[in-house]
Length: 110
Image (cartoon, rainbow, N blue to C red; front, side, top):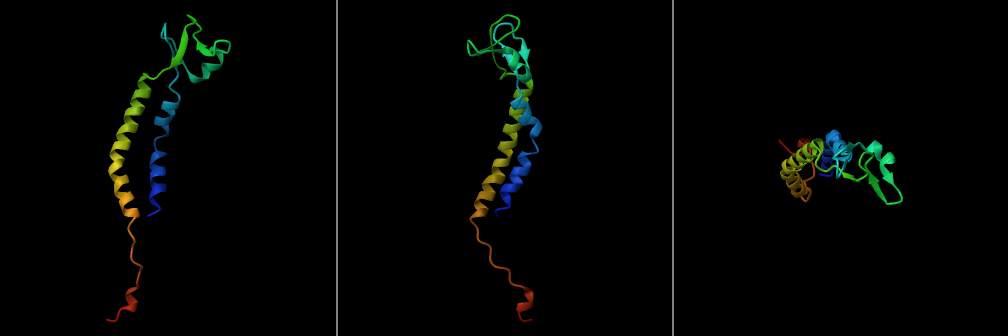
């Protein structure tokens, strides 16, 4: 039953776009709500203060946790994990089972 883990790995890899959206959620200014992509971090970083600063109003820029794509990806991943829990539980139970050895039918008399 050790072949189960690769199956789950393969299924989880079928969601690269969702996990990529979670990783690339971007940033938003706390004051003016200007949004920035992860590629803009180098321009926003203020090393003296140790924070990212908005180019427009100079307020702090934080992770954009409420982006629509982020919320949609989280929802899809939660549904996927919820639906897969029954399969995972059943497979975990089956890993403890010991299957009998195969005996060819030719060894049995007719």
